[in-house]
Amino acid sequence: MRTGRARAPAAGTVLNALATGVGSAFAIDAYTTATVDLDPTATSEATVTGEVAGAPDADTRLVERCVELAADRAGTSLDGSAHVRTESEIPMAAGLKSSSAAANATVLATFDALGVPVEGARDEDAEREGGSGDDDGGGDDALVTRVEACRIGVRAARDAGVTVTGAFDDASASMLGALTVTDNDEDAILHRDYPVWDVLVWTPPERAYSADADVEGCRAVAPMADLAADLALGGQYGRAMTVNGLAFCAALDFPTDPLVAAMSEVTGVSLSGTGPSFVAIGDAAGIERVHETWAAYDGETWRTTTETDGGTQG
Ligand SMILES: Nc1ncnc2c1ncn2[C@@H]1O[C@H](COP(=O)(O)OP(=O)(O)OP(=O)(O)O)[C@@H](O)[C@H]1O
Ligand SMILES: O=C(O)C1=C[C@@H](O)[C@@H](O)[C@H](O)C1
Image (cartoon, rainbow, N blue to C red; front, side, top):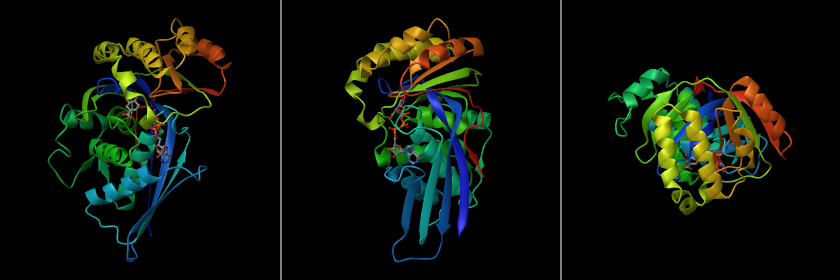
């Protein structure tokens, strides 16, 4: 039996990509951990099974597909059985990129089990991969970069049907850490930065699966998404977030009260992903004032910070 482990962080939204294909997200300090057990004993049919700790009915197709695709990339055929188990601090289908974190952690854990180190400091990854959707490994097939590992998880998410655009924005923020702006149609990184913020998250009790989101409604706010993209590419992440929040709350029929209550106290505030969570970024004092207001809402309100390390093996 060979066992591999890895973890990857959740993320919050600067810009939802459902309107135009351009999106932006930043990693936060909450994690999903994956453990992959590979039993090489040959069976008549190789099996990959999945399990989500605390959620026996969860759909495990995403993480199972991640194991298959990572093994393919490593040139290993899964003749025996493979089992992946995830444990997560991130609520599922809450807008906090649980699917990206689970996919990234599983791909990294599979490579860990196979003894394949995933290369690349975060800046090297961004430089090597910046702007190119075609160059998957810097030209060296033996080398797996973190961006390539991330693209494997994005492909698995598309295969499993849990995403609309592939969500390379969320996946790259989770895998590389810090903040990315991406073109999800090309799976390309357009911009990268390392802001340090206090972060407030409100997660209402309901859940919203990204694959069920009203895509036509999101496309209708494309002019505001273009404005948010210009702001984010110019480094004005907070203003981009708040424009995004107003536009996508309108498009997806979420309340704007949490945004209005927060926007004069913080640097930026938005609906995260396709909801229902909201995220605010700013300094500690402003975040604490908004915390007092959001704490009265139903569900969980919690403080965290930006995360800059991204996914890690072992
Ligand atoms: N911890 C996990 N382990 C295994 N699979 C997971 C895990 N978290 C999420 N998933 C998969 O992702 C799906 C949820 O995807 P969805 O995109 O709706 O959630 P999200 O990533 O939290 O939301 P958003 O994209 O709005 O941030 C689940 O149905 C499951 O297939
Ligand atoms: O499924 C998708 O393609 C996406 C889902 C949300 O997280 C969005 O925030 C993201 O930009 C794209």
